[in-house]
Image (cartoon, rainbow, N blue to C red; front, side, top):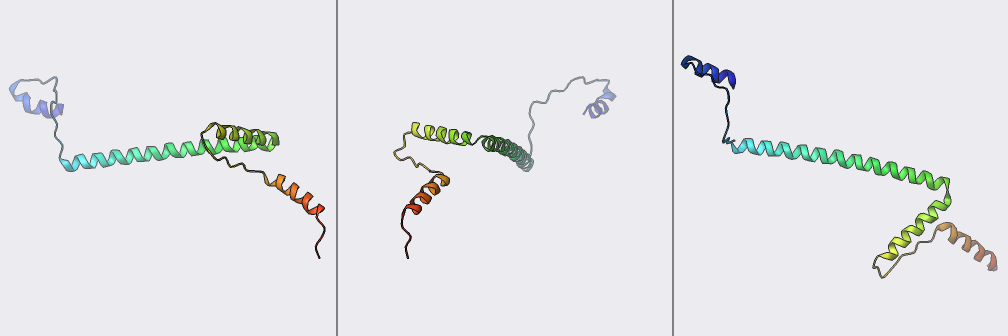
Length: 118
């Protein structure tokens, strides 16, 4: 821009030092293209952020699973925490899941007490 101004004003002996642009009008097609590019950039960034969040969540879940493997009591404590948080909500029904290993223990005892059918 400076070179163009110098070329146009030099024959008159004028030196332009500063130019202030007051109003710029872009064609509609260019505005749409710029908006589409900006939207694509935002969507791309949002996908990257979502992927990073998923990665952090999966790492946290893996660490939690490692803790539970090391200490089976941790699973029971987490289970009780979940029940506590459910009970604080204003739900009229609470589903109380029972671990399969507890049920299988009772089923074994029950089947050993009942006589064998022929």
